[in-house]
Image 1 (cartoon, rainbow, N blue to C red):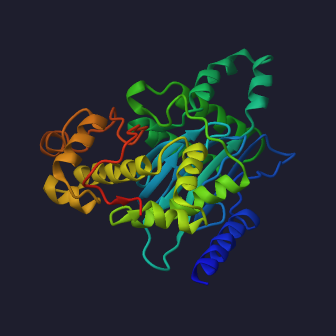
Image 2: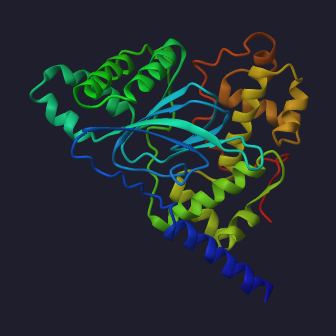
Length: 332
């Protein structure tokens, strides 16, 4: 009976994702009076979920801290985070919240159809300068430094405008982002990332992300994640890999290392304490993974390079096919 009840609960959770406001493909309503959409929303919100859409998106986080996932990249964010997400690339920003807390108007978002930019380029050749930016956004780009500061201000300035003024702000933002130096860019998903998405796959991933993001510093069990969506472990493992382009254990490892990066940047805690705080139980294992993915040891980062992560690629796409000992990712 318990097994049957668990299966029914899993089915209900999936149905909520499939039939409720948490559908995977966000439908952006067309506006006959605007070729670009600007809107803001709070968090939590039905709009804030793991989703994708054919429109391009320029995204500003105004307040709070948390974790984000773009394609197969997992990282951390704080207020002032600016990124561009290409057409069809899955994304989500999950804030660190106290129970019952709501971040009002956390997000300012610009969305536009790339087709009109392409078509307009035939008549306005200067728009061709935007093409490389849109092509590179297929991986997602996080903007850093002065580019992020200027872009955040430009996004805010666009909000109250309409008509030609809105287009003027968009073109200014295009020029800013297209001309951003490489040092102010962090490319996110790997170029080969190609998730196999449908309504059920996105609902499954949404539930699993919610579980992992809530428990990543403790004991994360694949068996529990599989039970959440009503699948046997072997089926879930293959399904998750196909839907997201990465293994379940890789996702947990990325999240833990991204959390460690933030702690190294913002605290004076010793590396050993950070290792255990983010969910690793073996210091040498933590050091090895950190070195492989960041190109330096966490000790070096903490003593001399804290806060200087503009060129770091920690959290992008790690591909470790075998689960390592000493981590709390359990398969049973």
